[in-house]
Image (cartoon, rainbow, N blue to C red):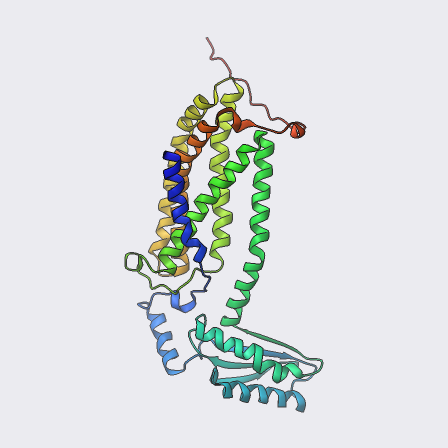
Amino acid sequence: MSVILAGGLLVALSIPALGMQFKEAGMEGLSRSTPIIQTLDRIDAAFPGGSLPASVVVKAADVTAPEVQTAIKQLHDKAIATGELSKPSSVTVNPDKTVAMVTLSIKGKGTDKASERSLEVLRDDVVPATVGKLQNAEVAVGGMTAWSKDFIDAMKSHLPVVFGFVLAMAFILLLVTFRSIVVPIKAIILNLLSVGSAYGVLTLVFQDGHGEKALGFTSVGGITPWLPLFLFVVLFGLSMDYHVFVLSKVRELVDRGVATDKAVAQGIKSTAGVITGAAAVMVVTFGAFATGSDQSMKQLGVGLAVAILIDATIVRAVLLPATMKLLGERNWWLPQRLNWLPKFEHEPEVAPAR
């Protein structure tokens, strides 16, 4: 019953993560009570889009050539005519006359839907119809909005690769260390539950806005793009550390002839103090990040603190021992075709001196 309740709780906490959206908090994620942010807000009010403009960079043999200058002017005029970009704008040429940078003010605050729409129009419509037609010229679009979108696209495309690599290496490590198929599969499932729960809590708090008053922030409608991948790597590493620490003690007792159910009880009891102490220190430390003014750091602190708290309590204190007792000797099952794996022997127990 405890396994069902604990597992159901973690699954329920993980469900909101299915709707997680990525969004760079940018200036929206900073506290508006800070004097420097208040000054920036006044600048944005006077010059909308001017503090975070979009930049179009043109590289050619000579950007002062008539055809290049004509294309740049067409870029500027067409961009303004769309209504998605506006002045203040500027054109800057480097001393070698090989690079020209056109800056245009965009709508929104740099990372919201309005800014993304301005970037889309600039990249898909304006640039191809103007400077994009130049021969022997390189054109790129930059700025805060472009950087945010490109980073999110790159991260999404590489997430499966990173997740797959980490899970595969964890599986191999546990397979070789404990000579068991069941142990690595169970460890990966439990670790994914703790990470998924942290993702779900982040989505509920920072994307959906539950807890804005308690933590003193205003939701920007998404999670900082780099955070999920960072959390996965760090939390999976910490969870594996706890898992190997507990299982090593259990396996040591089993190798000395102790029954699996008794070995689990003794292993959990002997390691509980160390794991609880380490988890308490990290929860307090990471939880302190949530008191800052930067929303990205708040998300980092809450995500790490919640995941470690769940991992050290529900996962290590309930799910791990309960599933090991239910499986019994099947925890150590290894197919015969894998008997060639090296076997790590624990040191024999030393009798106390008389």
